[in-house]
Length: 84
Image (cartoon, rainbow, N blue to C red; front, side, top):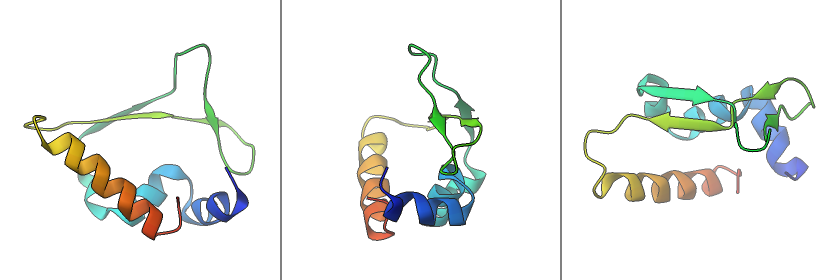
């Protein structure tokens, strides 16, 4: 990631706190966070530290249209917050 993304992400304390800053309701959402098991892929903190979870699974009551709209909205909010 370019520094203009990793720097503000680090200022928030990582990718999850940055997402919560963009969408505060995520703080209390039921979720599971885990590291990738696909060929050993994993993310690192912007400072190059410990691996961080790369998958977040959030609980939804009705995924028929909610999930697609949520992801589009989260994507737009991330871009507007400088995490594009």
